Image (cartoon, rainbow, N blue to C red; front, side, top):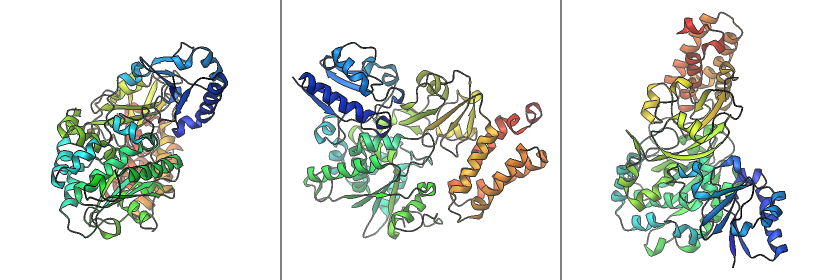
Length: 516
């Protein structure tokens, strides 16, 4: 009997030696005459356990980790192919608490299937959404997405159904679907994980979007720092075209949809949708003025849907199970699930997909296991390098777009960077402002000049130069950037600065009692 053994091809697992582990397993099996089928799957997202090896047994998949090449012989001695006990044994994968407590919708297949197997994909509900979409009128597809309550998962949280409906109603000889896979925020990796571990999910979501609005061509704009994602997407596209799920006459429906992967050139600003469009067109990544909206005049001047990987990756299950099913997850106007990415000073960094409404405290302690240093967690930057620093006093606020907006924070793309009580928030806020100055496209004055002056002013405050006067100046500068910048880069750069000043004034040399 042949035993299936899974070793992740995820780039984070590869960085921890997964390729060597996989090679050692194959060599050891050959040496012992044991028949195995090695599957390079995606990561389950338990990154402190990578490389995590899984073995298929009659009772279910059994996990081991972290497994290095030198551990392999000992694992075979312990009966690896039968799920035998070993010091690295984690038990049945589905029973690991970190995974069992999640609600995996978008990531339902990641780490479970072979990313390049149509058979694996369809066995786990793959292409069910596409098959249903092919039987629906475009307006009915849009209605399902609207009813689901899905909002943009890239950070802006704009209702996806409204965006699609605008493009559906636009008249043009050509329309486009563009996926923003330029995942550049610190502490984020969910887009990469999906593209590497379940690329067909994104392909299916984009194809459904094309059917919904009448677009026959799509582009995935992927950052150049993700070579594994680019490779996997191109390979999966080729497989889907051959199998009839993509390209001309999809599943004999008479409908067409072509998909191209476009590699970015490493500019953070190209994560902004209009700058991204300029880059796809072969121009320098500069932010466009609005109006016109990209939904009406986007790529090459044509109506364009621009969505993030997680937004489009949520579409297949919405179509497969219905908008009402998806809407049953979450709270308030934040419906469905979000893959939260736990990074920084945590024992258990990784990906956690949960419905909106849980708290930061639950993520940090129930999943993250507390700080890796063992010291108290002082602050968490939520939502990328331009996100607010959330203090411990706000750890119990539900993770919900509106609830976070009330306290001057944002959920964003779901990235968390954790800091213990040794962090200097004045220096961190300076870094955030400097990041904006470096990454600004330079088109608008508030961002281009404001960020540079902001760094200078923070330096003066830290040095104790006319502190009161410079704090007032910094607040005024942040207000100008927030309200006057052309895009979210300049408009959100004040978030970390203002939050650090408000919650951690002592780091700037300000008396906390006086500040309060």
